[in-house]
Length: 399
Image (cartoon, one colour):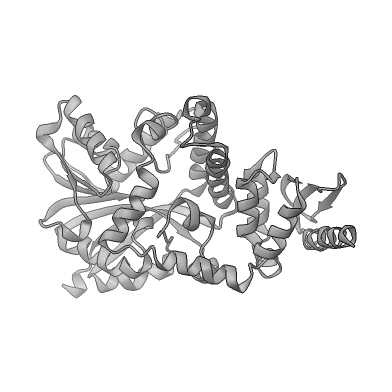
């Protein structure tokens, strides 16, 4: 009887895979057999090794989250997880209804996400969860600029540090940062952009963060570079900041704001920005046709990597931007550059792993982090998510 049930479960899972429309998929099953599926249209050549019947059950019962948790527990593997994720995203409309998590699992995930709201105290807790893994952890696999956001590759020959500097340049040009400008950076990370804006654009920078680890690192970094007289790093929430600035830059901080606070964020940008000045934002976005499911059912990233996070779709930004008296002037997407950035991060993380492996960072953490980087890479490759640099100014019609 047990053997019949197991075969039935494997058949049910393979029946889902038989709807493949793009690319190819080779599946190795727990009973030692393998099955191959081929779509009629071009796509990634992916493989999936399911190492236990428990993994089959998790995928059937808990869908995408069950798959991710099985990966974390070493029950599912792939030679190229990014290819597998890309293939899955390309079939999202097929997989979502057929691999939906149970109602009780969806409720538990919604409750978890709901309890991670980005109030001031909630934001501090959520940011600490991710960024306070330690500066040494991030330094082990980020490039020398200590930049944790998408790079911009001007050429195939650009290394990661060059590409990160390209990104800084593009944002500085979008904001039109001039010598002597007082620039506010909302979410200053480890101080990479602040250092660039001072050294290369002649600006004065106030950077804010709610991560103590990042605050201490950025403060010391700018002092070591003898830039402390033109830089201030403050441990403060954007909602508590006062003043008016010539320019504002915010690099991939918006994803941590949370939909309930989008209006608050843009109102803060509007009030902190001098009349006639510019704000340049870089943010990951999600396709509008995927937004409702993403908002309703928190995904692997929101559960395990960025609690409280929420990607916007571009149409969902229109109202909070307008309500704040701002206008979106332009938005330039470069999602495939993020896919390349993530691939480089994953290679660097794997190379650094022997130095990172401790009781704090065990093999489950390693598999989780590799999945996170591959999960995002596959999403960018498939076009479900994008990254955009956006220019905001005050809307004179509302002034």
